[in-house]
Image 1 (cartoon, rainbow, N blue to C red):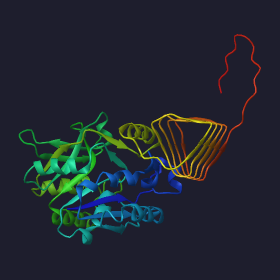
Image 2 (cartoon, rainbow, N blue to C red; image 1 turned 120 degrees about the vertical axis):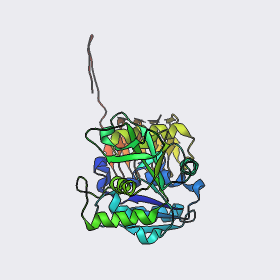
Image 3 (cartoon, one colour; image 1 turned 135 degrees about the vertical axis):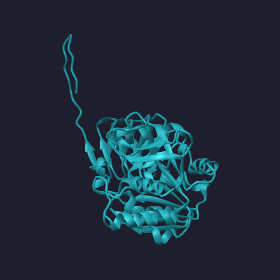
Image 4 (cartoon, rainbow, N blue to C red; image 1 turned 180 degrees about the vertical axis):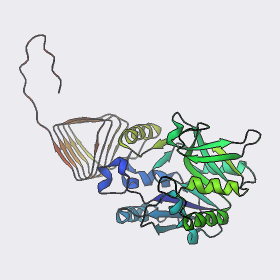
Length: 336
């Protein structure tokens, strides 16, 4: 089985951080998002990992090669035009051949490893593929699955429906055994310009496969961590730091307090400050006279004289505050 990870998008919901890097290279809980995704695939031992790259690929490819090139057989496929998830998968046709595939989105981190998902897929028995699902509160924001009432097979798939017929949301991980039919359908969609909201949707391709007698089943994804926007990124940072003890780098602490859980990179210097809980600080950063909690701090950043909470600071930033001197009378109330 081969693994496909689409990671070519610009990540507009994470601007300004994705102005200078792809979304999968945004730092969180000790490493880029892509690092967390690939860590969870090691036990799966895939035949090959196919990364679909595009926007700022010159930052993603060296990181993956350096940290995971000795772990996986890795192939890169370029997506120059972002025309939807279905289009990105179609570009891997020659790389996939007739192999079965797992598709894992490049901005989703799952609590379970992918090996657990694969075992659930195998337990589904003979089928064209399996889709990870989870009950969601706002189904109109997701791809939605409707099941046959008399079986465990999927009756219908629809991308972000205005009137959802179920609350089973597609979780962003797919197993497809009948790849020849998938690529045949995707080719048909591109030839006939079949789009939804201006993009070639993988959901539409799989629905067409069902119309052509394919049988898809589901498996349950207990929880996923969305890294698509700032609020969810900070929540994911907290969850990941709570899950395990991260091996911190070599850093220097001077007259400071570290409150775990934190993730601190190499060559970080912390002076007269409090860092944590739930702080991720990337390498080569200098923090002085500051308090930082529930925040993500990028590489080579200088932070001085600030109190940061629920903040995301990018790479090479310089953030300097100003200490205040106050003379406050009785019954006063002041907020900064």
